[in-house]
Length: 82
Length: 254
Image: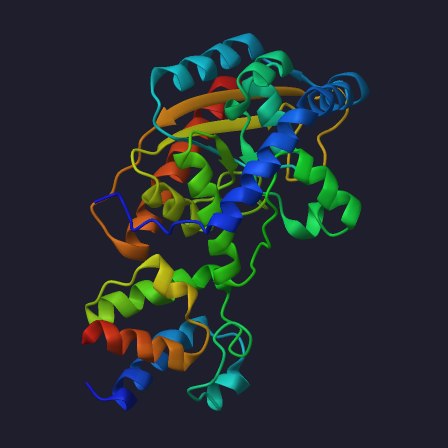
């Protein structure tokens, strides 16, 4: 799977949880999920569980600690897909 | 598949905790006495079936050496003091110091100023920044897991904060609690349901002269899931059990 495809899927998964529409319209790899997109930190769990379902991967708790930007999420998913 | 890879705590952090534990123990007779005076004499709080609950906690602890994580519902800012008081007498806690649960109070409410930091340090607390960066929260959870593994008790509120609906909210279950359970082999959970008779909603401090209902129940949550899904499964089992305890409370009041 191409990085751009993973990126697009990540953004699609994030979309329902985003509270800052303007940041979503300009979303890029360095967009911060909590600070820019204003995704509630408690809902980040739901986001990550959707990553697991959509990409058929398992994400450890520790891995989630390092997910701050969209790019972090893409890199993590790619590392799990192999 | 309950167990998770457990992050080992750095030597420096382990030493800090060991020092804090001994300082806390040193101050325990004074701090327990002051808390008792404040809660019992100044605020006039009372508990239903206090002796029975303390006996039960003592039995649960002595039944097994497995780590014991205390998880409670959360309605007021001083719940952790009330729960600790309910679980044992000051004298018993002085003699069984590992039974005094470590607490993780919100940094904003309890550790914003230097004097507050000093007080909570000697009260066996590790402040946590609620809603803070996951890496910071994970650091506190790793310390809690370390303390549990070495035989101490710890108290944590699985809803993450005081319930705004005044009822246990399963949707608020914080996966961090599940993460602690997963990282501590054979971890038992002591569910505590605490509620003042006049507690209609969440608040800062219960009303003066309040009479509290408290119930405790031990569970050993298990999950077949790994990763974050496993953590969520575990914490949801805990919160569901607290929901059941809450139903029992309201059924008994009808």
